[in-house]
Image (cartoon, rainbow, N blue to C red; front, side, top):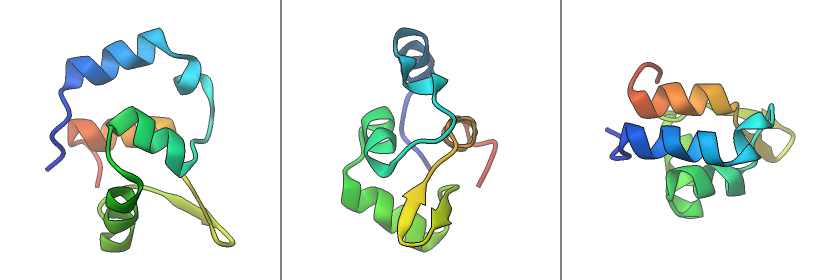
Length: 74
């Protein structure tokens, strides 16, 4: 289970233009979730966080990450 408070995430979205981007890098997911890079990689390898892969690069869709945090998506 993700232990990020919903209101904190929503406040973050209102205050930052990060959510205006269509695709996030792993660094931006780390910034949004406050998880370390290694934790995100572990979540990707477990298949518990929604992601896209192009070659060797990982990408994340902001709306999917927000749904994942809220528990609406796996």
